[in-house]
Length: 64
Image (tube, rainbow, N blue to C red):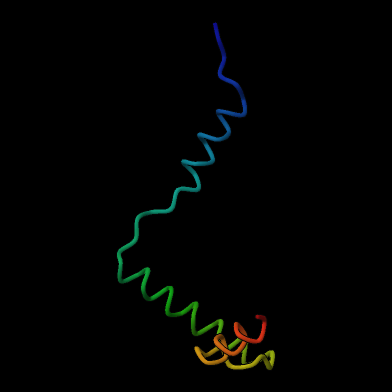
């Protein structure tokens, strides 16, 4: 009798156990909004410069 390779069996079990249930677009959009707000809060807390379009443009041209 041929037994399955233990690594293949572990991969199958892990993918079943760690599978993320499908989410709706509204849930994903809300999660992205929360993540963006959290990142902005973190940047303010750390004292980083405001991340704006003009700051990105200035940085881009400064490197050239």
